[in-house]
Image (cartoon, rainbow, N blue to C red):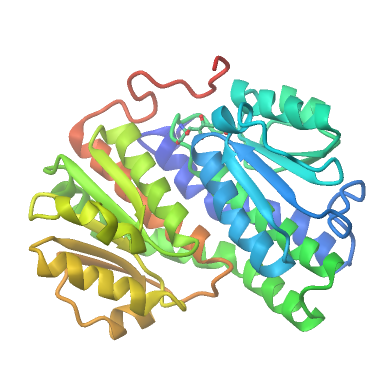
Length: 364
Ligand code: M6R
């Protein structure tokens, strides 16, 4: 039942504040009470963590890598499952591995899990479906509690995966002694504030995004740029746009612009720059200037501080509330998802069932 929404995807985008609230109620309470989310998964003693997944779940894992490395000082090996399973990665049996999958049935992710299991690694599953094959074969299950996701384009599963990974990274940081108790409390407070901020953003940005989407639907190619955790988000934005609107889109690390994609810049390829006012902001702004100097059109997705700091004349600027770095990827997902959604609606595509795609990919 789509309720008042035109598509399941739209409904699922708007369900995120509530869904994230459920995830946090589950995981953050555990962190606050100093309990491990799953006692059998001992982050304190592992030398490294392997993460594998496909598509959007992989991009969530990539953001998770930044968190595990930064907060828990835990080295992370991550790859798309279709490569991971064949790479013959020398993994230590003392390590642990996380497999992220909404459906819990993705063939390559399941094969990667079995590969790690054979090597003796401790297996964790970050899944939406607790009854799935990936959940069944794992030693520890971390449910994302998103509720059913019907739209082929993953939205609420992505942000719920991120919320679980953030909670796990904080919990790992605490057990590994790499953050102070005050830092843990600050991170937890920021996570806890997320549902309210998500609700406010969803209530305020739609009219602007719709106007922008109408414009975007006239283009054939779009480039997304970001740094730090905004880099995987840039790839997620591009994936979302291409899968439902069929507009060609690429996501790049902003610093890679000069190493190739800058050759493509002209007025016919808008560049969506995801740049919260974080420690990378000035660097990303200089990439934006390089785009503008070559006649490129910039759509800046930033926060209030970033909008004030940037002097650049953009094609459009989406302004979000300024939030802590740990929740920025979830908050910045919202305009990215809505932009892809409304662009697809303008293009008249089958948003919930885009051509050639299946919700669950059970063949390799
Ligand atoms: O069920 P899974 O999370 O394992 O699915 C992985 C990908 O197939 C999935 O995220 C896909 O990329 C989405 N359609 C993206 O929106």
